Length: 156
Length: 156
Image 1 (cartoon, chains in turn green, cyan):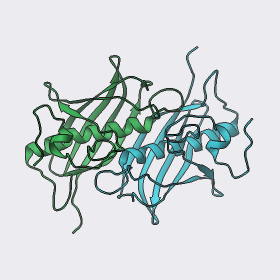
Image 2 (tube, chains in turn brown, orange):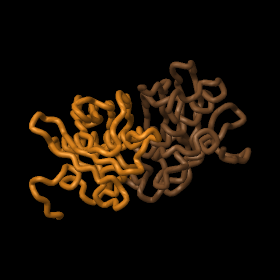
Image 3 (tube, one colour):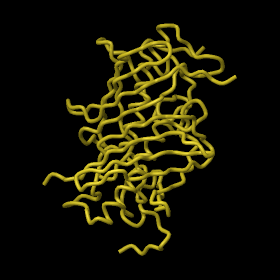
Image 4 (cartoon, rainbow over the protein chains, first blue to last red):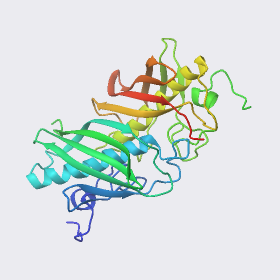
């Protein structure tokens, strides 16, 4: 058992050994996203881009935006799954995987300042979950996505 | 002027100085995607993931998949724009920016083998373009996306 403090992120609490590029705290070369439950029922996170996360025009790269939206929506999904007892099956490390991510880029996002992420599970059954997730800076949404997650059933 | 050989990629031919994380050859910490026109009218590329591009389950990370789908669709868009004379406006380095990326994950993609990318511009006007772009391995599509690109008009 990993000892965790009450302020640990969802990632460090539920899947501390995951090597995921976006949110795995066991991936030395990854983004190590930290997401937390907020009082309003959403899940929030802060993300500070790396200098190389440029979109070519001096703003945050759209692919990296997808990466943090996907992984932040994961935190909301895994927290919901954990609460409801929908635990990983067989040898799986996660209980759900992303089936789709529909991203709308609304405004440029800064490259050199921390941005905020917000996620809310809109529909949840054991078979699948839908999450609305967004990236904010300076009080305005910069990108929004709908993430569809499906129960991960590893092949025997 | 940068001297280029006839086999240079679309990125190295049209925007060799771009610092984009996914496809900028001036970004030392980036993926440096290289895309080429294919005889069938599509644009193709090969991408070899880095070890840290794990999705946490031993496959290619979904955010990195988004990054290469987005940047590979860019190559198809910029090539079309260049052919039609829709050049970057003002001080812009690119003539178009991504407005949306709708990704469907179909099957796991390998982490330790090169994958193929295919992009085709389906609709093109000077105002916007729509691209179908996909990631393949072992003869099967692993992820597909529809990318919407809009003319980039920098504010004065």
